[in-house]
Length: 199
Image 1 (cartoon, rainbow, N blue to C red):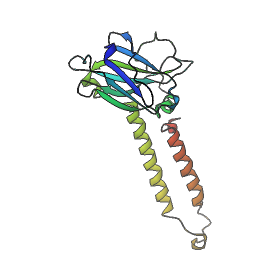
Image 2 (cartoon, one colour):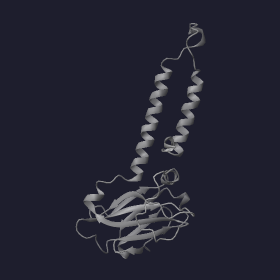
Image 3 (cartoon, rainbow, N blue to C red):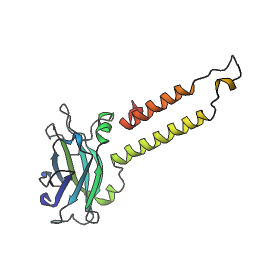
Image 4 (tube, one colour):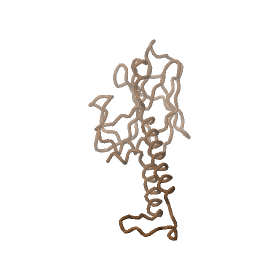
């Protein structure tokens, strides 16, 4: 399988120098990954996967103080021999991870100072049941964005000018500009890290 896998990072040459970790796991290094937004992982066409099997594609950002923490991107298979994965949001997700590292490729790997892509040959049926990290990130971002827009629209529908206000000593009023500031800050934080609300 070593010659059967390839990776493309935009603006760079094709990489096919996967290292075999186990009989079914392969690893490749992605240098200078901080500015990488997307990667393409593909079968080169030299050797197909065994029947019923596919390649789970994992990604790990470098952490100089810890073993790799692997995040599932998705999979490739004989019927889907290539896939484009967005990785730019995964670093933020990895930095906020609270469940500890997922050590898919074993504990014997050295600590890495560059990003890595791992391909693990697994039953295709089980891969179809798994949720990639990018899907979760996008879902959290979309939900958060829709929620704050709904909240802001709801609050704005009750806005009054100062001349329309009727004095009521038992009622507390919050300026709409304060809600607008909160909305802007929340949206900025959501763009930076869709999981910030977990901490």
